Image (cartoon, rainbow, N blue to C red):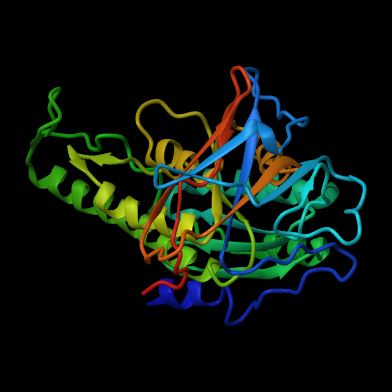
Length: 354
């Protein structure tokens, strides 16, 4: 109940702040599907000199004409030309639109020592970095989940709240181990699971922790869909595995990933480098157009995520006539040697969750 109540605070208590009045906003009809794309070279550097003709976009394997093209080439580009038709204009350079970023402090999958480190790193970020996004902070916890701060540009307020937040040292949580579990029994080399009283309890706790995490991200996505435009979700966590004790948990991760894509929310996972198959690294970040930034330097990782789309492209296409509600697959291609793309993999013509 506390988890549901806390997630509801995303909009009910914090609200969504309006975009600054001096920003240029491109308004389009609801029939236009927009896809934000980051293109990197083989050294993972963003490519900034692409045009509409470099891209191709497919909707459920069908090519669609690109009706909107906007390129963001850095933090301070020149303004749009006046009188441009937003849906059909090919803008070589556009100002970065108003965006929202939600930092999720995942205490459910991070031990106490890690929480202390994350708090210190977040305070360092807020001390000397001015994000262009409206920034909110959410705490995901077994004991009490909820918004620490509504979306705001007030870094002093955010610092005050982060400095005074509870790190809850008594909460018995931490990263779920891959495959799970030690002690008598446990997983064999072939992935099957041998039962024992200690292992059964450990499996129960680990599986519920993984399921609770994916359900929380799913519910966050349901509220993010109400916020316009592309959103960034920075998930600071030691990670949750896709496999626990030989059991595969994709049945829980898939709905969350789909809803994050429908809400146009890209997930950036922050955390120390991990060995093995990690659900957060391999699924949520890759399939929503975000990134897994495996580093112990959390402050630098957050900066990288917040700056990720300063050099990027927005492609837009009209919904095909008679498009039905449900997931539509998106494929974007670029005619650049060794170009690597990141973008959300799906959308729904009917964006409300039902």
